Length: 198
Image (cartoon, rainbow, N blue to C red):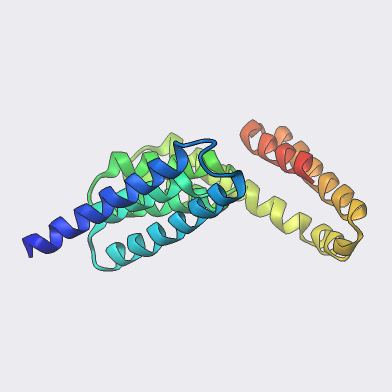
């Protein structure tokens, strides 16, 4: 049993070392290779983290999901969210809330993150923060519902490059304007960033 625990600790340290060596050596490998290494590392770490979580090794899972968030490119918010769930199950509520908050910092439009923060803050009697995230989750849901027909039309233009890009940018700008009107500047900024990327 002790050897099994030491083996898992070694795995966490090894994964962290892989992350550090991949992320901390600019110029040693070309950019595409480095990106591929990081994506492979993130995938491997996620697999081990999920296994640890399934086996109720929540502290280990939290460390691994946190490591994944540091190298993940596309789903960092989900890695932070999973780290939050792991910390919460390990009884480390402060770290859990920090990880959940990081998930919505990385992706302010991550509705599931706002819902989780709504519930966790409410369970701790932190009503003001709970209400803030509840309002964000509701606003995201409303915008998603209203914009769905527009996205359906935009998706019909997918093969037409510039036309789709213009439609997507216009939709993101409209969403940003709504969030501004609702007094939610971080959500508006996230939509504007998406508009610029379109």
